[in-house]
Amino acid sequence: MTMRGLRTVVTAAAVAVLATGGIAGAAVAAESGAGAGACQSGTLKVTTTDAGQSQVGMNHAGTYLKVTNTGDETCAIKGYAGLALEGAGHTALKTKVRHGDTYFAQDPGAHTVTLKPGGVAYADLVWTHTGADAAPAKYLQVSPTGSNSHSVVPLQDDVDNGTLNLTAWSAKLPTAG
Image (cartoon, rainbow, N blue to C red):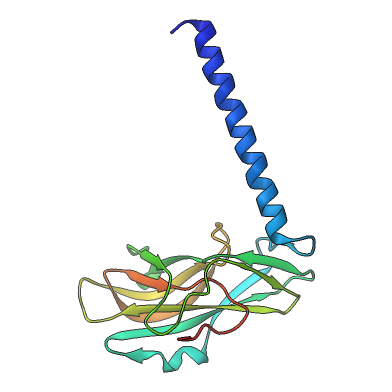
């Protein structure tokens, strides 16, 4: 390939990247609306809630994740949390996350959830614990927006194959539908 041909390919690639980024940026802006911007690192705290205690059956266990906006401004989150299992001493464990319906709840699908200061959103988290290549989880790292900023919550259960099932964030507790 000649130098001129290489420049043409590089220029075309750069134009394609800029065009794609511009279109994606416009889609994100339209989706989040004029109101709330994306929640920023450090303004979200994740906990589990007692509502999930009833999620036990057929070797399945689960809980609800609850994210609270601890900031002073309304913000928005969308989609699924990032998850990582930890063992004793906070050692990393192999983790696989499946997004969608869980054994106990229907997935609302990825959508924008607006959180006023003090506002909350929920996701259903479920795993099996039959002993099949079980990961002895003690903690769970939860990144509400999938960024590096995360909360660590206690888990204290064996998780088969390190596999977790998770619904998207929702303004109300996910249910079986």
